[in-house]
Structure formats: C-alpha cells, structure tokens
Image (tube, rainbow, N blue to C red; front, top):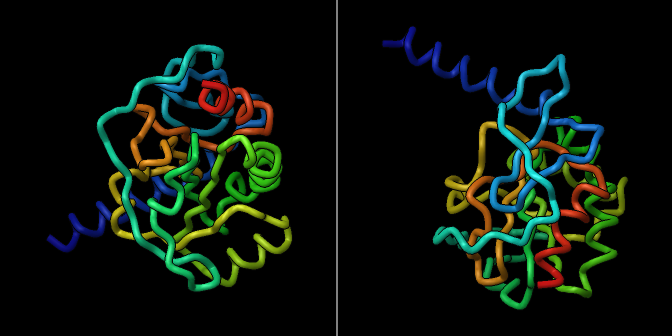
Length: 198
C-alpha cells in the first residue's frame, strides 16, 4: 500500500513540474474562449488540444460558480462577492517557483492597468511561499489583488501552473476549459476584449 501511495505522489509531483515547465509559450495562443488551450513548446510535454481563433464570441456560462473567502497579502478578507461589478475576472493560479508564471506577471499587470476601468479584474492566487510571492509582487509592481489559495478553489485548478479561469463578476465560470499556461500581453488582450466589449 505504501508503495502505491508513493508512486501516486511521485506521479502528481511529476505532473506539476512538467505542467509548469511545459506551460510557457512565447507565441500568442490562438484560442476560443469556450475551449481555451495552449500549444506547448516542441521539447516540453503539455496537454494536446486543438486551438481556434480568438475572434469568436464569448461562450455562455458553464453552470459552474466560483465562490470563495480568503485573504490577500495584507491579511484582508477577500470574497468573490467583492468583484460582483466586474465584467470579467481572470483568476490566475500561479506559484513563485514557476518560471512561466513569473514570466507573465508583467504582462498581466499591464493588462490589468489598461483594462481595469473597463470592468477587468485579475486575481493572482498562490499556495506557496508568501515571502516569495510578496517579493515578486513588489519587484514587478503588481497592482491587482494577490490572494492565498482557499479550499473552495480546489475544483477550479489544474495539474499545471499557471492556470487561469475566466469568471463573471457573480462567480459564474465562463468557459468549459481554463487557460493552461503563460500567455503574452497580446494573447491576453485578444482573449478578454470580447468579454469587455459584450
């Protein structure tokens, strides 16, 4: 029994490491908000899926709802209800040890600053070293909320980081699949604009 548990834990760790390593993408991903995926670099393993143009209309809600209560880096209580007036909430699950996660922070920060007045909210959610997360937030001048992971979020994460879930202000999940992997500014912009303009 111990051997089986050990093998399962090893497999989970391997998936998490491969997910982070395989998640980085230098080229904007062509996606459909209803089926958001990422093409992986040739040398790395990542989920295999088809991609569709970003220009298609946003998908309808999936019937799934993200509702949580957690704290931010300053210890303030934060709930999903705090963002009810947002048109679009990107819940970005990341970790300070993940290179692709850290690499996309400046693009996400720029995206937030550009579109926050049009109804965009970005929530960065981490589950590792608070000191490392705080240092990166200060280094990259991240202006959007950085939150601690909470158990209510468990059903919305994947085996890969970064993973981003698109959510309406009321917590309704907008796409069947999350965005797996890091994106550049242009890819994020193309993805969010149909939601903000709709």
